[in-house]
Image (cartoon, rainbow, N blue to C red):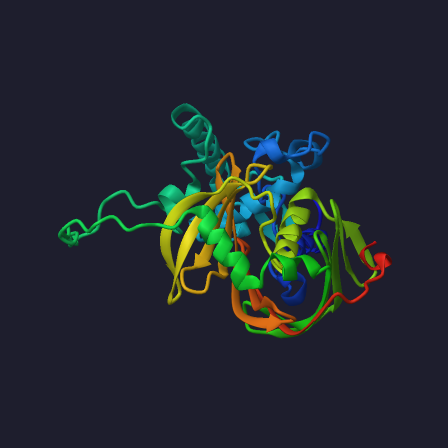
Length: 376
């Protein structure tokens, strides 16, 4: 397998494409090839190589697209509350991911097969059961209910059913709250200056160039130099110093999620099929939930403030054979810019070792001319 430095670069690039950019900025722990995520297989391009074609000694995850390996490994680590070396062999700065020296790795393969077979036999292949279902963040899943037993609260008298708004009413309120269709349609580009705040609280200068609907360039002045990532329609690339490479499909999908969040409206007509999902609290705000499924089979929940109508959160689940990989974007501190409400704080959360970061906007300029070469 590759040396730590090479693998760390791979992990960092994946994290950047997930817009956290954390690994290159802090030197986070490298992750293994047997530590990356399978996305829903229906969304993987046929021509993409699988992990058993690109990695050594892959057994339980054969057929998994290579670009989806890292997220699955992050899901394993988060589900058990462990790090890479729980299963994988490390000697000093050298990783030997293909070795089977540790019993935990052999056990993990059995658990992966058990989970896949359970979902296939009992849930029509849907990932209803995952590693987290049993482990809930612990190395050993609990098997006995704790004592003393906490009695559930008494059932309250049934209240009259609340009259919920329709999905269309929620969308109409959202569009009006943002500034209206006419104002939103005029927005073609955004040039942004601000800062990137990682999970440790380190603040780094950041700039963005966005052209609707799917062109985005981000530069961050990291501790190891300038980090650049770009989305240009269906393609993307990332660069640090003299190192540059194309993004894989998983990285592009995550960067596109951020691009969607930078648009004036995160839903465009004709709207996808939306269903009402109830009401839930986001911090101290109540939110109506709308659910939808994207063309690539990702499950999305949108949380709209019941009072203001503004979008508070977008939560996305990408199904894998061993569970769903979550992605969350929180939109806060809305301010008016040229008649459009703009979230000046966008917090992204993933199942990374360093799982979240926040984009803090300081200056937003609309409809500034951006040279096409910037995204190439």
